[in-house]
Length: 408
Length: 148
Image (cartoon, rainbow over all chains, first blue to last red; front, side, top):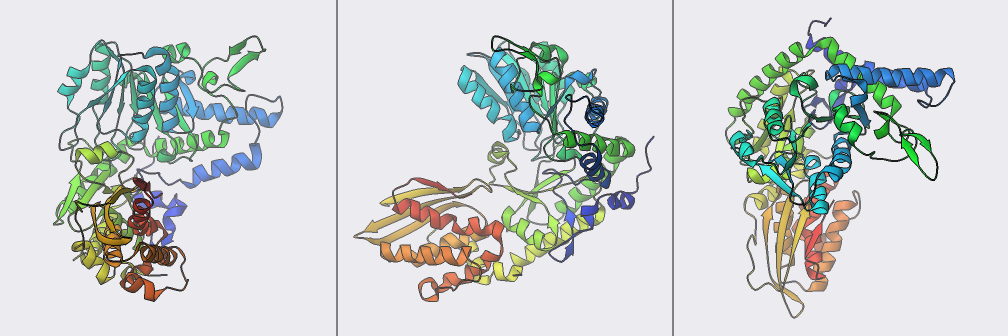
């Protein structure tokens, strides 16, 4: 059951949106970096520390059992949210970066060797480049990069040509953080599978904006961060098909991830605990569960419709400004508007907008190869969430007018 | 709280749109690359030092108005100066940018004083000091420097 979408009511659920910044009401357009948290998420974390705080999977005492139930209950919510088959396929991590590194370290080191290919795209975040470069260097494997066109679309025919029996892994973003492009993920997976290669999808920028279905996508790994999904920082998710996770060696050794330890031999724990060494971010997992409840209550039908409308409105408004160029104009985009201006560098745009209480991201967005592809040093990026409004975009346009005034 | 007009003064905007000494010095005796990994600002600085004096200076690269204007004004202020004097200007500039409320050494800094408003914008200080750290690197024989 979903609640009818009323953006003003939704904004009331996010206390931070009532803030003033530099004397102006906050206009938060940096959701690609991190999203704001509804009161229900903040309450879930406070409640946990106020009433339940205990270690999980440890004690016989009541609170420990409650903490374990809540922590595992959140795992079930997350499994349902991405329609995975089994809770044991949901591994808690710190963030997207840790999820990718886990796969690179654990799956990669076991399965990738000299002369093998790992395929990424030209629009990856650094976190989906560097772990593979490190692995390639260690193993003598090759990192292959699928090019993109001027609008920010992946060149699928080039991708097809790159696939070969040497391809041992494809690791590609689901939604580009710098450009907003939504990639044809299911098709990417199907093509890789035809060549026997597993696929990791970086879903950090996808999960806040659209439903993702592990069984429909059929990807082998999927990673995302809680904090971009209206949950707390410090908690992330790695989904992996059980058949892969079962065969992979552990990532971090320690407590929680073992069944028994002697100095002669350690027996590792079952999934998902095999990959969750050490006391986890229990409050973070519970907070993420609350965030998913919040998103489910709104429903992606309404969220996507609202964000698509914002994107259309914002694209039209920015396109009409002379000397401003939108970077990333793919046909199928999530709520991200990256842009550059003839007269002002992105950092100057960012400072002038900030003076008016408007938060955008400026810089290379941890995606320097994208910047190199478009031959620009940086962009300014406005990224939307479902609590943004057309008034926020009007404020952005007014802010850009001020940039033009300063740099006239 | 300083306003935008303290930051984007006319002289800064003018140096941004028409940077001085924006060139490669072919017979440079020292060069260094400066890079701010946080924002991607990048500068190459060329110095030609003859008998302990900065005979010629030039810079190239890309960056925001603040890093560009700061680089341009720096080249103007150190050209023709002894290495000791250049070091003195560096120190006075660094102090002005990083110590809000501190006394500004107007004699040493001259026009550079107009950049003092930057010290109210902590996120932009790295932009302002990039060229200066690059100069230090060039003079001390390092080939690159990053500000973070």
